[in-house]
Image 1 (cartoon, rainbow, N blue to C red):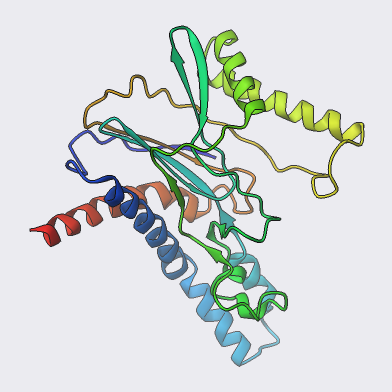
Image 2 (image 1 turned 90 degrees about the horizontal axis):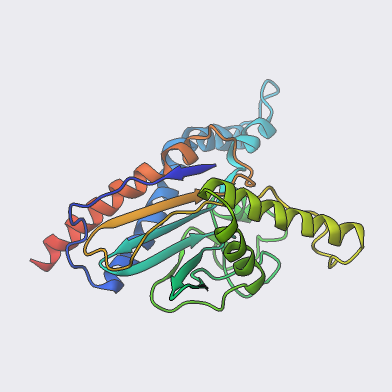
Length: 272
C-alpha cells in the first residue's frame, strides 16, 4: 500500500539542527505505535484480558488474538534544507539515484534489515505478541525487554553501501522507461523473475524459499538545493499482515505529520 505524504513548505522545522530532526522522527514513529495500541486495539486488549481472567464458553480468545496480531512497516524520506533524511521501520530499502554529468549513481539510504539476524533490533508498528504481550510467547518470555521496537532507523548524511544489483536495475529502467510507475513495476518484475529463476534452479539459500509481496515507490526530489522546503513520501509494505483497510495504515501518515508539528512546537517552546 502506497501513501503520498502531505507536503509542507511553511517552515515546519524552522532551521532545526539535524539531530533534532532525527529525534523528531523517532518520537513521531513511537507515538504512532503507542496510539495504535491505545486507540485502535485498546478495547480489544481489555476484552481479551477480561476473558483470560474470567473464561466464558460463549467467546473464543482466538477471535481477539487475530485482531491484535497484525503489524506494518514504513519508510519515510524527508528532504529539508538541502539535507535528506530516511527513517525506516522494518525491511524496506531506500535508494537515491542521482545523475551527475550524464552518469547515474545510486546511494543506499537505509540499512538492510534481515529478520533472521539476531544482532540488530526488529522494528515495526503493532505486533502485540512480540511487544507488550511477548511474555505470553514461550520463545520470548525470558527476554529482558520487548523484542520488537517501533523506533525507526534514521539515516542522514552517512549513506550505507548500496546494493549494486538493485541500483543497477533502477538505473537501467530509469533510462529506458517512460514514467516513474512503469519504471517501478519493471524493477519489481525483474527482481521477481530473478527470484523465480533461482527457485526453479535450486540456487536459493535454505532460509529464502519464499518471498513476500513486493511494492516499490519512486519520488522525484529534483535538485538538493531546494531551500527549506519539505517533501516526503511514505511506503507501507503491502506484504505485511495487516488488512489494507486497517486503521493503523490509514491513519499512520496523518498522525506522523500531526505529531511532528506538535513535537516541533514543543521543542521551540523549550528553547525559548
